[in-house]
Structures are given as C-alpha cells and as structure tokens.
Length: 480
Image 1: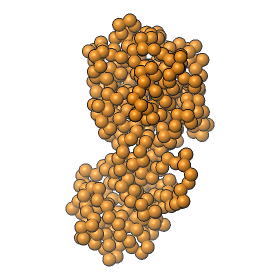
Image 2: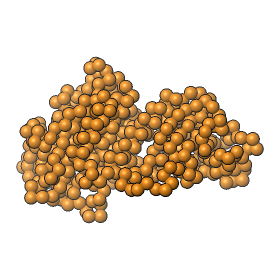
Image 3: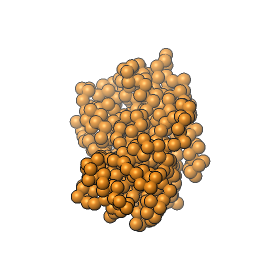
Image 4: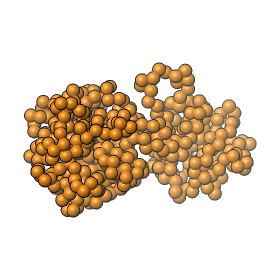
C-alpha cells in the first residue's frame, strides 16, 4: 500500500474516500459546506462512541464519520482499531484510496496507529487463488492529512505494517510450499535485499555441531532442517549484540504424540516466531537502527516415520545437557534450547526468543496478551514497555525454583514433560531458562496471539504477524 502524509486539506487530495474522526463531546472538525457530517450526528446515524461509523457523500467523495470515543483514552491501539474499521468500510465502498484527517493534537503513536490499522486491515492472502474480477478496486493508497508534517512517523509505520504483512504471508503459506529449505532461501533473499549477512547450516552440520535436541525433532522428516543466522550491524560493531531467536517448525504433527486431527491443519503456523525474527532483522536494517542484532532461527518439521523420536528417548543438547523427550509434541522448546545456546556462543549480551510454544499460555492469557517470562527484571521491563508502545501487549508470568524443580528429569538432567502437568507455559520457559543461564533473556510465548487473533485491523483469519512490531521496538531501545 502506498502511504503518504500531506498538509493539504482532505478535499484537496486525490482520495476517493475521506475518513474523519469525532471525539466524544467535541464537534466535527472541518465539516464541509452544508455540514454533511454534522447532519449524520444530528440524525443519530453516526455517533461519537468508539466503533460507530456512518457514510455520506460530498462533491462526488465518500465521507466516513468515525466515532473515536473519549479523547483521553484515544491512543495508538485505539487508532489502529478505528483505522481498521474505516478501512473495512472503505473496502466495502470499493475505494482504492483513503484519506484520514488526522485528529488535532495527537502524538506520533496515534499517527502510526492510523497507518498500521489501515495497512493491516487491507491485507489479503490470495497467493493460491486466481485474481478476482474487482481486484483492481482494492484499497491500495492511504493519505494522512494534518496541519503538521507527519511524513516521518507515517513512513516508519508503513514500513512496520508492511513487514508485519510479510510475516503473515509466510505464516499463511502451507507446509508443502514453505519448507525449512524454502524459509532458508527466503532469509538469503532478505539478506541480499537489505544488506544483511545470512548463514545457513544444513542438518548434517546441525548434527555435527552437537545440536542433539534440535536434531531429534528433525530426524523423522524427509525435509532437512536448517539453522538460519541473519546478522545486522548498524552500530559499526560498537553496540552489544542482541540475539533474536525464533522457532520455525514449518509443520508440527506432534510426532508420535499425535495432535488432535481437528487442529492439525493449523500447525503450519508453528513457524511464526521464526518468521517474525527474520522480518524484524530486515526491518531494523531498513530503519538504519544503530544496533547490532543476530537473528537465529531453527527451521524444521516435526513428523512421523520409522526414524521418529520416541517418548522416553534421551538426547544431548548443544551445551551437553541431557534431556528426556517424554512428549514429542513439546518439540519447540527442544529446537529453541539449542538455538539459545548457539546465540550465547555468538557472544549475545542479551537474548529474546519468540515462539508459538504452548497451549498453556492460551489457557492463561487468551489471545489478548503474549506470555513473557524472563530471568532479568530490566530486560522484562523494557520488553513490557516495548509491547505497550508497539501495541503488542505482553503479560509477565513468574519463574522460580519450584517450577525449575518440575523440569528436572528422572533419567536425564531435565525433561520436556514436567509432572504434574501444571503451569505448562512456565515450565516450558524454565526449560529454556536452563539454556539461557545467566545471560539476560526474555521468552515470548505467542501461541495465543500468533494466529486467528482477530481484531478490527486483523480481520483476515490466519497468521497475525504478531511480534514483528514489538521485536523492532525492543531492539531499537537496546543500544547499550
């Protein structure tokens, strides 16, 4: 989508449709002659309450009056929701271009929200469908009209939303099209396009290196596993290294611990953490952020064959830790365990991992928040604040000795099936904590937010691209 900002009045732009917001207790700003928007309010067809929309016409243009609610509660997320609703209505009106009259006296977070909400709501995944007859009438341009120049925040917001849509594209692709090898090729293309350094290790190298936990997940699949490393340095080697670690299980059957058949088709989404990491590193390069980041992505399938890992098998991780694999469907933590150790060996000063890891986090938090667990209060606080600024919210869950005890194995040092089966999201994090050690580390469990997380601006069912904005925002703050 083309996004631009102007100080021209909305009616002086080329937009086919104009969106104007109204706050509770305030008048419509800049109502055209004849006050058609005021008439919508007076008739009761429109309202000031958040979520209310009404349409009228003026001089051949479509005008959408959007209720914004109370001004003091209108933040970036409220702007995303309002913009998503307006973009949906503009699409129904078959508009190709939309101009938002930016509300007076708002900050850059609101401006970004208007862009995010519009670009994300306009997303369509039609890679495998023939073009629809009216495909040329899709919303493909957004203009922001304001008294001041918002070009810079609008451009940054458009960059982030576009990258988030690329994460959604990766997640929505089926597993027969997006294999570990295909994802590795995509990472190499990103590197070429964004001036990054990409390194891909194949399965033989993963085994030779000693990544026994990662290799155990991969060994049943006919598709070879890949370890993807994507590096960006915008600091000239001066900033401490931040590692972003992502789980990219491109399809997860659950292994011999077979998943319920009604849910299995959704397991193509089990690579969303890795996709968010790859696109976050590329976006940081686009923004020329003065940071040093390495993305580490473990890409594999978790399949069934005569070579599949069995419940009760014991493997040795990259750092020498022995692990009882008593649940083959708790595979993500095995992949991440070796990737976290790998990131430590790259010299990471801090590590943030992201994964669609546990159903337990959905039971705890639903789809409104991602779970956050961390061994470092400062990094946890920075992650929470980055979530608030980006609109991708996290809720911190505890770690502790009692949970760590639950992860201890009977026949090996640790197990991936803690008993009793309680605090599932936390015990998964405690296993990862073992490998992070004393390096500042934060874990994001996005099983609830990563897909089918429908809001007015993520109306297209499927991958949400969640985590891209948070990772970029967080990495940009970690400059020292």
